[in-house]
Length: 158
Image (tube, rainbow, N blue to C red; front, side, top):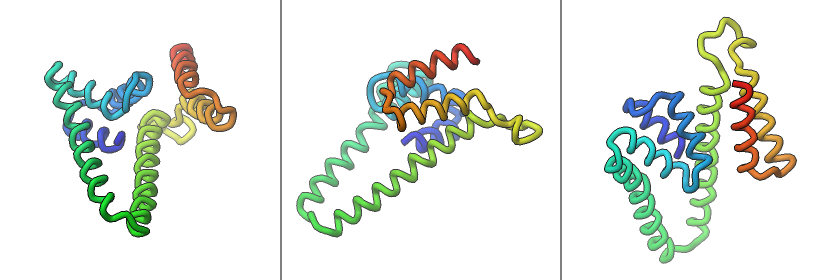
């Protein structure tokens, strides 16, 4: 969803890439699904409260209708074939998440126009990124705590 939202918001001029990254960060620390938070924020910036309501409905209603129709359909045709479809869907979703992660990381961790590769990397941001990953994956630190600590480190370092 992040990849789709980024593509739509940036191409339509609703937000810049840097603003989008900030919206993602803000959406991660607020309660609720990230797509809903981001759509609400962008809608509010474009057209106030009415824009926020329309953008939120635009993100929620189609997915709700699609899932409801799919569940109704699949309840009649439960089989090995439908199980295989879901295996393929999970693989596709994993690819979309990886694509969004690479896109956002490349925007935040690499400086455009630097003279060489070593100067083009934002080493401070890379350190925070790797430390956060290790803390969550290896040491099972609560992601909310990692977000808070990363924010504090970002305030201090940047």
